[in-house]
Length: 94
Image 1 (cartoon, one colour):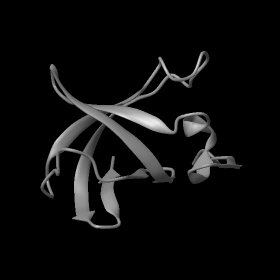
Image 2: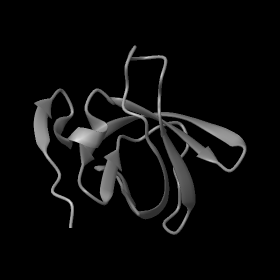
Image 3: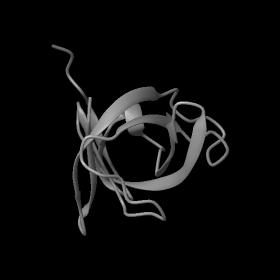
Image 4: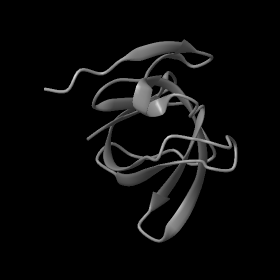
């Protein structure tokens, strides 16, 4: 199993994959759904802040880095599933 390094950032402890990614772009196939703030990240999980759209548990979403916020963001694209949607945030797993 690959070891994930973490570092402190404004959104909490974030794996190196998410370093510099305070915001991710969410889409459902070809349809862009919006930008969401990363609250927490783990090796196979991501917690996003609530946004304009609330996704039901079981929804499949595409998560991508938002390249326009940072000049050198991590290259990231992942298909994820919503496993929890509460006032604490939207929890995704892959």
